[in-house]
Image 1: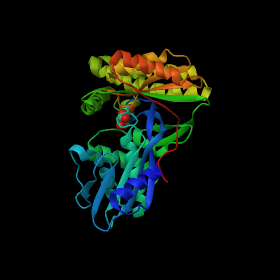
Image 2 (image 1 turned 30 degrees about the horizontal axis):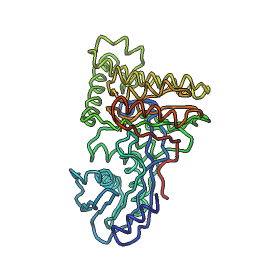
Image 3 (image 1 turned 45 degrees about the vertical axis):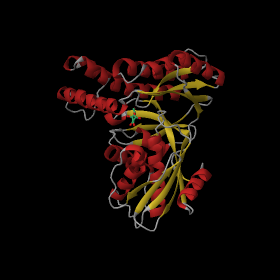
Image 4 (image 1 turned 45 degrees about the horizontal axis):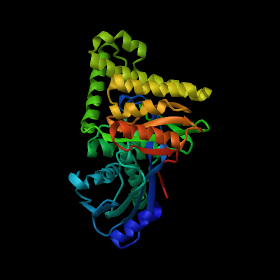
Length: 383
Ligand code: GLA
């Protein structure tokens, strides 16, 4: 992808780039919507991602081009969010602003070309990939030193404050800390990033529904609000808890009459997901892949019933892949309300089984699912 980025850069700007960076997309393995609730989550960087080519300009403009259309321009001294067709540029522009706020000095503007082999809207967080690739590339050309955690926070800040999406640190953290054949484990309360090896012979299969809830952004923001509301009520009983994730399943059940049915189900999902991350960690350490799979399937069930961030299409894919041989478990991956499911499988799960699932999906919904067989790959880096 590096040569494609160079080519797009040269064709658009008529000169050569002097830095390239790559950042991967991510799978959410387990720990759904726990990140902005101060909880635990495990993910993996995928092999696919976004590559950028950059160089400084000799004026104070920013010009960004993707494979999709004409360059988008913005003045370095007044970076504000764009609407409409150029709105994809808000991710790199938001990162630029977050880097400036973090102390990076920019004497001149820059040109940037963006290429991707990560399907957009597939639930694999192309937004975190572009944020992290931009952060690495700009830090290199402007001489700004930062560690992986800082890059992840800068990406999240761009998304929260510039794009206006109240996401947690999962996507950016996994894109920053990804490692081949490893899961990234994040304790979002302390923003501590760790890793766990993927058991040998296990694989990820992604099935993208190619169908999105029309109100996906507002549905996410609604869940964010509902979790805060549930926590503010539970805090009356448990004043020592700093986040919803500090409440144990037993403590939640003891307080269940304090919450209405909807808030109770939202809280059960978060509290249950934290418990499932712990269960998955112990099962991985014990090499008990059946138990890992059970926790993944239970996570999806909780999304369906408690958090209501699944859809008919996601449920269908989870159910049909779970019925196949050599599948440990499957669940929606990421925010939900459309997007993709992830199946965690053994070596024996084959392309023809995946095709069967896709054919059943086409039969049921008249939509082609995108199927990606991928592995845990490395995190964001200069290339
Ligand atoms: C999206 C967000 C993440 C996280 C997941 C759900 O991917 O960007 O921060 O909240 O949803 O776990």
